[in-house]
Image 1 (cartoon, one colour):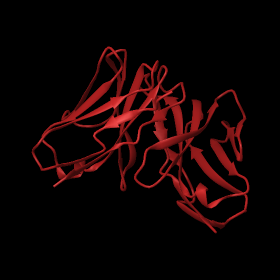
Image 2 (tube, rainbow over the protein chains, first blue to last red; image 1 turned 60 degrees about the vertical axis):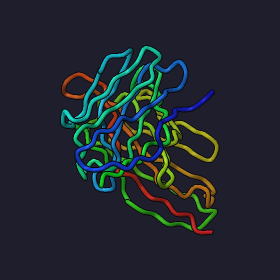
Image 3 (tube, rainbow over the protein chains, first blue to last red; image 1 turned 135 degrees about the vertical axis):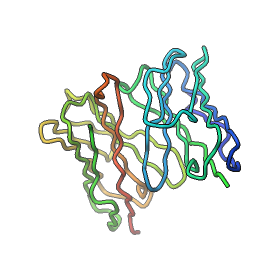
Length: 113
Length: 115
């Protein structure tokens, strides 16, 4: 069974640009969650999607958005990038949300210059 | 608000020793707790998931225990190996003030096994 995949693995952008990251969950999983990981703040929850609907949201500004498609694949978008957005972005899939075991992808390393 | 603490932040032990990693949480109204390992620059690998009704889970050389009433979990690693070197994170599943399911992560313990 294939694991969670994330593309691209690495990204370099400049301030003010926007970026789209993609996550393909494990087959059969309907919940996808996104996290931002930085050395200073650790792992912070961005949002969770389930059956194409945002079910849960963390405390991030509106520049961070996401969506989920009918095949459960998810994308997150960050607009007007800031230097502080440099981080490892991780997605996790599960059958039905955080009541179930979470499986993480390898992450996308975003660097904002 | 759920807060999860992992102490110590870093730990070095000689190969072959048994060791215990600690995780504490402030709100005992949890529905599960999961342990992960993370290698540098990589994603998280799930190690063990303990449901709130369980006291422990075992997988190979790993054993995780949960004491909800005291707000603590431990991850026991037997006969440590250099390949166990990684950062270990615990995550607590609970319901937020808004009624949503929420995973709260600790900041991790960076483990180094010395050959």
